[in-house]
Length: 353
Ligand code: KG4
Ligand code: ZN
Image (cartoon, rainbow, N blue to C red; front, side, top):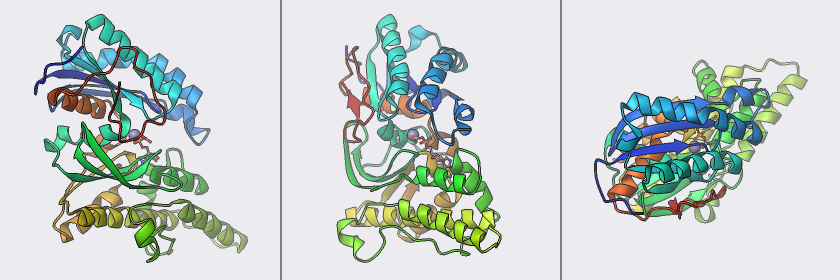
């Protein structure tokens, strides 16, 4: 089944790749409703997302989330023109809950189905806020599972990886360091809050892959395992010496080390590619210091930055609906009703057939 290219198509977006059960409706680039049910509290005591717990939570929450998003949008199911769902990357059991629901909807409503890439969706969500994406653009994608720099010539068809993390994702580093500091999961928001009262220049934590020697081979790549280890060693040394660990200072200094590298490399990628537009997306894009530093550095180089509001940076259904609507608008091929889920879907595959 194909969808007629249309700028005002009503698309429902379903996201279940990790711990958020999320559904949103869009009409073209207009967000009509956006409902997120998170199972984060159920994972907090484990200090990370437990896949089995996440899958069960999606099964329990999805029907009610679909119903409330539809109601808030003031639509009937028959109004829907197309269905978009995250098909990967993510936790396979979690993805399958959303994909199965989307298949059921597509079958019942006889509407086209788009299995979309979660990473591309983190970029595409900005269409709903700041209008059609500039092309080409560089995207800095920073989430709990991924950290990469992308060249985006067309978010529906042409995304080229420029670099990525060689070890931990930025969000993962925030979560692990928060744990070392005794802060709750997820660690990113907790560190962001603590850091506001801390001195970011108090501890000089390492900036991964920023030595002159890295400028060739790993120019656009990242590494965050070194800073995480440095924080762990620093805390242990303090404790062994019987000296206090000022959580706010450690949080601020760690956060500065991470966002310094992210922002510097994003700007450098724009300059290398001769591109004047930078889009920042993913959960870590909600970080207040990253947002400020990227804006400041981009400004200094005449680069236009787009960062969606924090609520649309962390996982949500609007991002999936937005990418779905862009695919409909460009007349891109739909997915098969037997669409699988792919837990390691590469960012270059924007839809899964
Ligand atoms: O994109 P996302 O919601 O889920 C994935 O696709 O992974 O990103 C979640 C990650 C978590 O690691 C969380 O700690 C981080 O985003 N995060 C933040 C902030 N808010 C969420 N990291 C730093 N500062 C924040 N304010
Ligand atoms: Zn995400």
